[in-house]
Image (cartoon, rainbow, N blue to C red):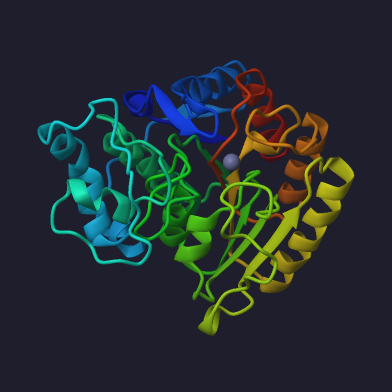
Length: 333
Ligand SMILES: [Zn+2]
């Protein structure tokens, strides 16, 4: 199995994040991708390849040009305005208000939470986007399954919003590059609000998400079961909010419902937003899915026999990430 990976993600290493406990060390750290890479390197059957460079056209298909301009230029503008070099963090939010002309003042217009933007963020997000696009091209070239080891993750990034550690939506880019009918299944513990927003009116992408009920879990405002798409995309968004403590049996039964919907949609490709924060013991989750359960998820997905692109999303228990990648990807390798 080919694994597309770029070490440029290391340039994105914020020191801290604002949580309900105050400032804490940044959970979405470079070691996440590195520990997964090490596990794959030590296992026969995985071939690590670098991404190729890509023109920006595809990015502009899913992200707003003003938003892309902001992401690219905000950090230098922020530092030039004598704001803290530790990172760009909004303190006010637009909430539907107008976009200010000044880049620094646009911060709360293009962010839905306090996820920071640091010096290497744009470069790293772009490299992750290139990993996803290159993985899509490998799949189009005849691969059975390809893994884009993306960091930073992407599923919370919407058309014109960053947040939840995400800046560019890697899975949405991959699905768009693949074209045709795509089933995009998100198994990250958190709802993939960005991906949902990008494809909400599409009848070419079936977006399905199993995640913690937004009534108690981040991102709080999206991911309810009655969000089902709009216009010609009506019915092409399906959410499966799950309670705290969800373990293997409940998870796998819910997954079966999602898989039945995928089969009746008749997709050409499966894109999987894979977040390992669904596992028991994740510091940002409260599910109780086991590694064995994750392997069963991989087996069920591989059993669909669709060309499959796995995109890395969340997962914050550093001691478990390598084993998690092997459990999920093993059935495809
Ligand atoms: Zn997550």
